[in-house]
Length: 193
Image (cartoon, helix red, strand yellow):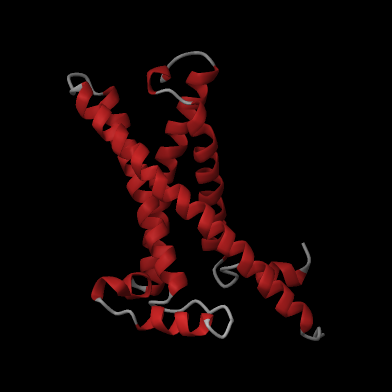
């Protein structure tokens, strides 16, 4: 990969977060794809559907751990207000970014801005879906638990996937657009030696 394209990728100042981000993105994509081939009743079966379902559960449990690691890293590196300023009713960063978009220009990532807010919401959506799926798994394998409760949790998990899927595709598209525009902008600059 040439140096200019690599420089256009996000999180160049945080290689750990870049790798974590890529791993989470790949696992979420695999979850989206294999969700069409799983059946909750197939868990433990020794056939293709059973293996795909087991993979879905295992990678979902991994996403709980990775999501917690990601949220912890984000909060320890940049703090709560960086990603969740809107929870304190501080919308200055979002307003600033909206003004920048009217120029038309992409805003830089900063505390309380659109990029930080979207990153924070994405991690919350990831954790909501993964934790709900994990809760279903625990309820499903625990003897004596009401099957209707497990079904309700599974229905909630399936409903929440709408948010993470929308986030995944929109965030991915915006990320690719940002990489493309950054790469294009950097190619116009003279190369320094």
